[in-house]
Image (cartoon, rainbow, N blue to C red; front, top):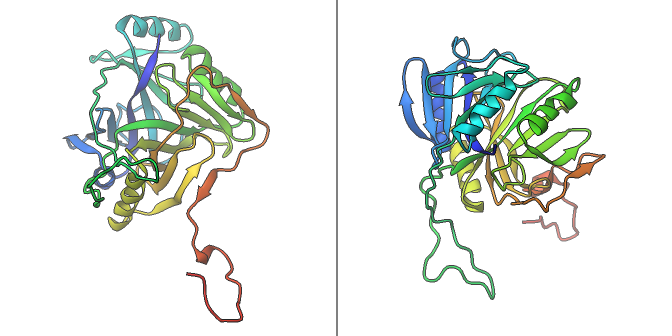
Length: 312
């Protein structure tokens, strides 16, 4: 069995209109809208599903208010899906719906589902950058990015209680064949699925000691998309959650926005790609959150100078 990608993320929300407006502003394509749910997609046709928090078709919540109710993982074949369902039924209830999607829950109580993946690959033209001795762009001046559109959901981060965290992580490692790539003892475990090469696709974070939504991360094509996407969201009235920076674990450039559907969303670019030669790194202490983060003079005390000039 190989889990290839995240197929969809399902949120329970308080306000369908507000949350659909948020994700349309974020760059997702509206696929379907009814009185009970909204479906949006990435460029590679992963789905984001919004339903009201009281929708009886949603898995039971692990937190009060809006948040992620289910993550659907894409598996490489029908045969692998059948084997996985048979294994999971040895210790938990699994239901298979009319679309062939198998639904159950993980050790924390989050809804988790599995479907045969049908990925769509799209060509896109990322920005090209020039430097001395390396010219990737001739006679093509840069222009604003008119429409920042996430290529794909690259990872999901969920909060879990400290009690039982070993069992919660083991479910994904032992039953679903995820691989621990960075184990941060005071904080959580970053994991990679078998069929992808991102440094991590999933994070279980026990630092807050409660179950709930942390964030979803959405890959865009480059550094400019991260900046311009965040600027667009601010212009549309949404609130930034963390400044532009570059993570330590995973190395990706990031920008976070508070999400009315629960937690935060992250524009991400330039994530580390790793294969089986990349070792599991165990950190006794939590590494710095970022290699760098955008700073201005307002973040630091400006020293007085005899000339009376200020830093620009």
